[in-house]
Image 1 (cartoon, rainbow, N blue to C red):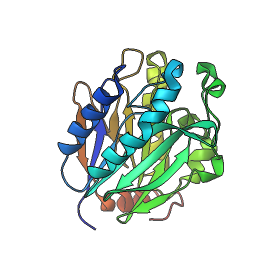
Image 2: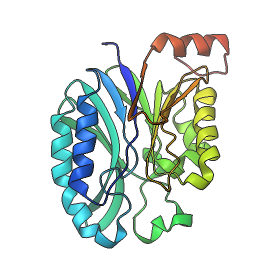
Image 3: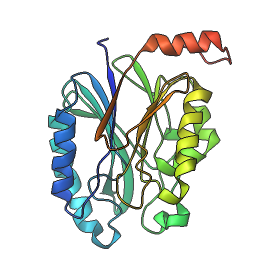
Length: 242
């Protein structure tokens, strides 16, 4: 396996879907080859409930464009799509020109009214996906609050968290992402929107619990080191393999 760089993106989602896509593509192209890149939840459209038909129509084109820039990269984000008359918030993982994994958001944020607009995914599909020898777990925003989902991802090398997390609960986002890395003794790569209502606390936390946060940096980078995971799990043995 080639050496990988972990990348947490941070940018603002505008009302223009294509502008957002071009921002995403530009940032992706600036990352090194062999990067694992995480963008924030619904980064291409936001929760544009009033224009869901346009949002869903844009999804196919956006998917094709992201596939094109995924050579030698692993790219994670969520995209709103309609399937069989139902609308879902799909987390997607792209790699080497292909969509290699997707699942619908399983825990919707009722406080924000998501359940009134989306169908819910299957919690049993919250699972570890192995790409290029990296065991990747994935939690979408509000799913971060459910300890049962943390357990389903035990043994991950990297847990990615694309989010649209409210600024009023910024401390929760920071605390939970830090704790997730410490509890599972792995890397956590979390991306939150830079929009005014969000935390702007995209970041990377290592298996020791050391956190890096974006601040004003559009792309935060940290070298992935599998040995750091193994060392931590041997040093502080709590029964996690790897």
